[in-house]
Length: 109
Length: 116
Image (cartoon, rainbow over all chains, first blue to last red):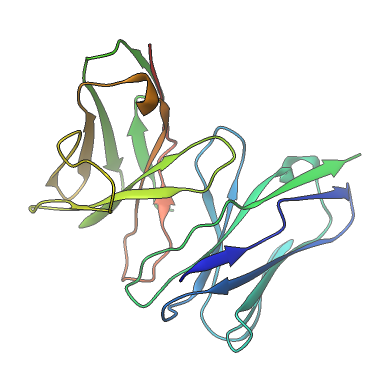
């Protein structure tokens, strides 16, 4: 079957760094997306990885290891507005996104 | 960047009535749009894939006669919840991509439907 495994909730301090891990199993693989979703709002696109390695985009970086079925999202210099859910969504062989419940990130002052 | 507009953002309706939700791609043509449903603290659930000029492809367990999808143009898809029931109350979100199969999805702002 296809599944996503992310921590349900994480807490971090403003200004710090946090890493949100994601392991996945899919039927085939066509890349992995990370989305941010604030409560009551629709998701917004953060990053896309299809090759192994690290993709850096400002304060956010995303890493992928296809052989391990593993990805992480790294958030630096945390701000209060980063409090949100972070969704790891791999894409299977049919180009369908597989969604988990996401990781709720709580930022404390 | 790509913008997807969804309307209305909130709607309250009575049981038995129908509600139409619109999803528009404002600055690109979307041959394919996706409709999701999301319950509180749950993952996005793909309901159907909306294809311009053809019938939508529904996911298993989604009633196509209850959730009518029309994709009449390259910039507009609509979802109509027919004969709404309280259990249809949910957050409905549309999305579209403007590139190939693995282009990122851009989401509308979602519609909070409450059926009384």
